[in-house]
Every structure is written in structure tokens, then in C-alpha cells.
Length: 253
Image 1 (spheres, helix red, strand yellow):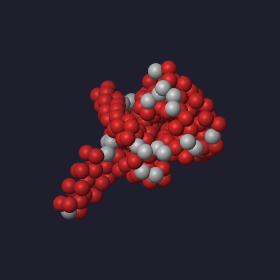
Image 2 (cartoon, helix red, strand yellow; image 1 turned 90 degrees about the vertical axis):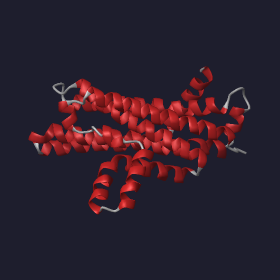
Image 3 (spheres, helix red, strand yellow; image 1 turned 45 degrees about the horizontal axis):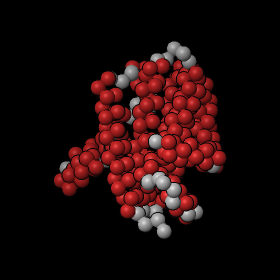
Image 4 (cartoon, rainbow, N blue to C red; image 1 turned 135 degrees about the horizontal axis):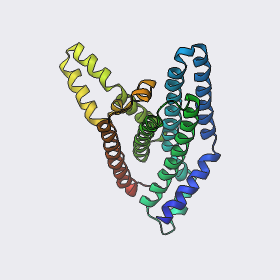
């Protein structure tokens, strides 16, 4: 575990110095500022607008970090041949991959918590802090699922293609109810069966799409939270195991 921790710490330091992190952070701050300005235009809807746009900003920041950092995580190490230098030491490929992914997870966790804390104070202390944490957890798990997917695809295909494939799965996971609705309306058997296959092959992200003032105010049921944790952990674990298996046999020369 010490080797994994060292790689994770190094990865975190490298990512904090990259322009991508600053760009994503800047976009999130701009969206938060925009939500404050829009909320000021309508005092009766100020909290609702601030919450909806604020959570969207956090989602964009966390998912953006997962997509772009995860897609180019291994390709940079292979192109610079630093991966060969690291693997020349007594460290396995699984440990290397786990350490690199852990660095992104730590960065994403810090980002979600920091932006979430700022948003909570902007919303005011009258909102439920517990409900706020549940929504932040849903955004964090979404970003982790995306990270596991983009890491898996980056082991198999080129970074840009891995990024696009992960983005498509993310969108499909969010839009499953809409796809099911249009499939039922079309009454096309092939379309209906295709949507069923998609719902089985993609994470059901729509089931914990709670980034709105509605859920901040009313909360989320315990069963839904348990389902979110189980579903997310299952997807992350399975996809990461397959990533490790493929990475062990990948030609990196």
C-alpha cells in the first residue's frame, strides 16, 4: 500500500500543477458566480437557482476532471516512457494503475468537498446539511463511475476515443428514462429491445440524479441512497478489475 500511496501523492501533485485543473476550477467558479447573479434577479427563486446551478457546476468540475485526466493518464506515461522506469522497480502494474487512479480520486474528492462547502455557505444555514452531503455524494459517485469507465477504455483504445466513449455512456446512463419513453411511443420492437440492452449495459445514473433544490429541500430516501452506493461500487469495482486484467497484458513498449 505504501507504493500505491507514493504514486497517488505524486499524481496528485502533478495534476494540481496542470492547466486542466485550473481551467475546470475556473469554470466551476464562474458557474457559481453566475448562479448568484441569476438568483439576485429573482429573490423568490434565489436559493433554487443557486442550488441547481451550483450542483451543476460541481458535477461539471468533477466529471470533467475524471474524463480528461483519466483519458490521458496512461498515454502520457507511455509516451514519455516514465512508465517503464517506474515498472523497472519492484512495483506491479496493478499497483501503478491503482496509485494513478487514487491520485485522481483524491483530487476529485477535495474538489467536490471544497466547492460543496462554498455552495452550502452561499445557500445559507437554513438548508439541510445532511441532504446537501447526500447530493454531493451522488455527484462524487457519478464522477467515480465515469473515471472507472474512461480508465478502462484508455487501456484499450486511444485517449480521445476513450473520452468520447465514456461521455456517450455517461449521457446514455442519464437519458435512459427518455429513451424508454420514446421507445414506447415509437412502438418499434427493435428500438424497445435496444433501449433495454442499453439500460443493462450502462450505469443507471438517472436514478441518483439529485442535483436540484427539490432534493435539497425534501431529501432522499434511505433505500435510494443504499442503492446508489451499491450500484456505484459494483460498477466501479467490476470495471476497474477488467482494467487491471487488460493493463497487465498491454504492450507498453
